Length: 188
Ligand code: AMP
Image (spheres, rainbow, N blue to C red):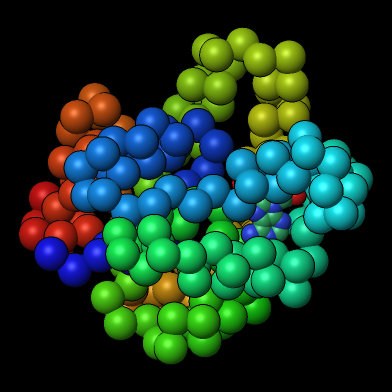
């Protein structure tokens, strides 16, 4: 089986985290979460971590050239070359998407899935988990920001014919089967 090359998009509260774990189990790619990589760098106090921390705390994006450098190094590692990848949190901007295309030498066999959950359902799920920063106001701001920043990215993947839209409502199993069908090109 060819290694899978996947990009997953989905707002907070879409169930993306849970489904990433299941996709990795079922399809074997390496999960590359740029948010996790940056948080690890912050925890270790590396140069990257020091640069990234203030931006992350402010909810701003880390500059494209920094992110592209990190991801291109990671994609070159033998585990990724052998098993493929599930990119989570990258690309975040059209410039990052173009860089990904360049790094991979094209977009052959890349699939992007957008896991869609309506804003009111995503809000309810976040309020349910009851984290301190999950006030209704903060949630609304994060969801709005996601919408604005992701719209051009969805257009980019759509224009390249790589995008599948997957309904994120239903049980974990139902959503997982839809994702798998979208990725494997089988109708759900
Ligand atoms: P996440 O866990 O994906 O929400 O990422 C947490 C934070 O890391 C974001 O708010 C950004 O500050 C930063 N970050 C993660 N991925 C990227 C990216 N691809 N481009 C720029 N900043 C990123």
